[in-house]
Length: 341
Length: 298
Image (cartoon, rainbow over all chains, first blue to last red; front, side, top):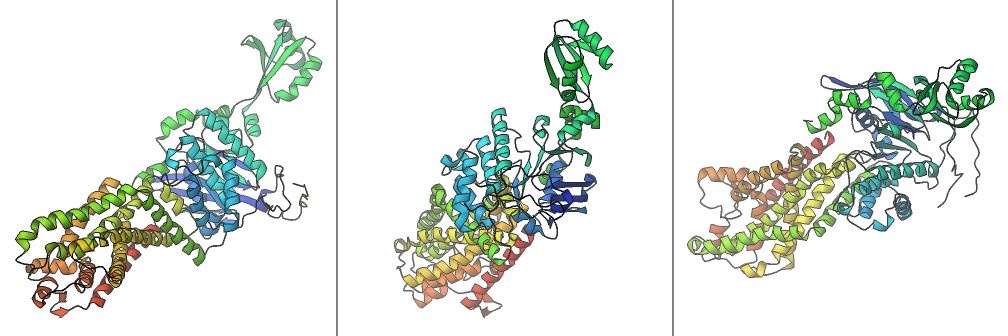
């Protein structure tokens, strides 16, 4: 393994304009009358893990399909790994890895054969193929099963194999379209384990879509998409901060004294919830030291709960993801793929 | 790994930091396209070899035609075959038929690939889509010809002597025929997205084309309408050269030759074998072009 100047730590945040892994300007896609993507702009820096959050039908998959050169934009432009998705399609394709929602493996081939097929199609030099195959298969824990036919794999194993295959040609950007949808919680968390491992091991940008709120928290930054538009784009922390306050709960012997002290010294109205004194405060973590220093009432324990991304989605769209999905009527991309074309 | 990391200065554009295992993939171009053709072809072979049942079932139909239909009809047909065993006459047609069905199955794999999602893996690869179509067609042709070789092994059972030249001639013609059929099938498979619909379409087209081609009866003395349809059937121009190659190796009376191998005429002009082969090549290229064109926008 010849490594030159390996930066094994998490990459430093870089100026997005200088080395944007993904740069999107005014991107538009229409399916007949339906405008699935209505002019979005975004920049993803090299090494970033970028999450695309939104209900089904928000336009996430359509956007990702355009970035992966599978769909031609109707307006605007996009550059991925420094190449234009329309004019330099093959250059984009060589530099990206793709993991789709639906499986794209050949069940009649073994895992190793699927990977070799991929290596050949993407022109991975013959000399590095065995080493590279071992690396990606070991990473997802399928090295021992490499010679089994893929049709004997479980759903979770197939998804892991797809991730391994997406990484085989060392892409600069890995696109994961709903990487954990339809998987059991244990497999979901192990997939996130691989993604964390991957970020540590390779200089790679990860661009993923999800509609699980808890998964979005693994991302460096999140874009929230709803009805074809980006309605918010920031770090999970900043998005949550924009929603409002953390929930601080105190365990005290004298609840009334604590409530009085909070009102007098901090001007906060506390209540008793779940048996604890509960107060809503911006920047809860910073508040805790002040609390201990200034409250003047003995405290036995403190917990700080942040607002969830569910709260964030709710505050931007006025609806929960689940309700938005019920109203959305499915993904226009899927509708198009099932229909004529 | 020793950390020799130097953080780039804020002013300079940071260079692309190499990944721990640096893989530089080959650029696009004809080499990439050739690799694409090769790997798609290889996959067809691997899958054919895996599916032993398919090899056997694809062999059953020609055998039924040859020995059940041919054997059963041989008595009532004996008057028209000038003393030649009907099975011997039908053998070249059955050689074509074996190839036909296997090639169709290969083309059908495009529909499977779409259904199981693997088509997408190929469509997003940094190779030209034409190379994927070509790989499929070469794969279909190879696999079908392997199947054809199995049928060719039956030659002595129908009184056709083995000969290396014959095998090569027939193999070349089978390759060409299979290529044409696969290209035709791929062309159809891009449009037809359900397996059942594709199979029904193929059944609807293949049987009439096979019967019209003269694979199972001589072209001499046909009714006018049948003769016209026969001349429009691309299979005709593959079956006749195969039959000519086989019949050159067996002893035939001039009367039998005239009755069983009248050749193909266009408005009274005897079409040379070379031209017949060119007709098949033409059909194959035309269907291939349509298939590639369709695949580009698939």
